[in-house]
Image 1 (tube, one colour):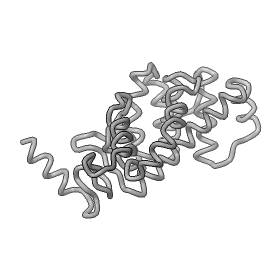
Image 2: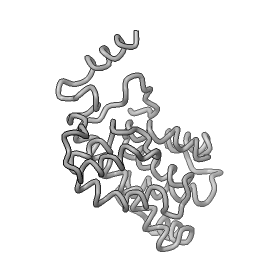
Image 3: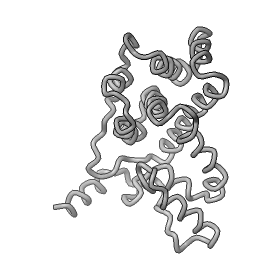
Image 4: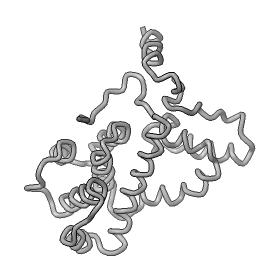
Length: 207
């Protein structure tokens, strides 16, 4: 039964998408890499913080090991050490995914947000673009900033001033850079047509 499900999922993919990677590039094989690139591969594969393993942006970026190596430290800083904490970081990522209507990013990060303590009611506000009434100051500021910076591509003076007061210079730069990181990741995933894993249920309603 499991084999039949896998075959059905593979058959449903576009003809230029590899079933094992779920995108337009094959999965990298460790034995095909140089010694230096194998070390990069091992760091990516051995990272327990990855939400999707190689079936996603990490696997795509491994086709450029030097890029992976040179950007990994900065990406890790923005993702895990930006000063916002896991809960607000996941909120920023979800706002970015929602404003881009990006199913893969949202479906990976909604469960991660819940594990980080992000309340289901706040996730619902982002998912269904509800008003920000009743939210905490920082939560409301992150959502409004994402809606303007990513969605409208223009940030109003009041929104900026509020976010600057709440997060400070460094915190705001980190917050916006985190949103930028996931915007660039969305472009990567779109270009290589990344699909959800077989049996993975999409969590984002897209019009």
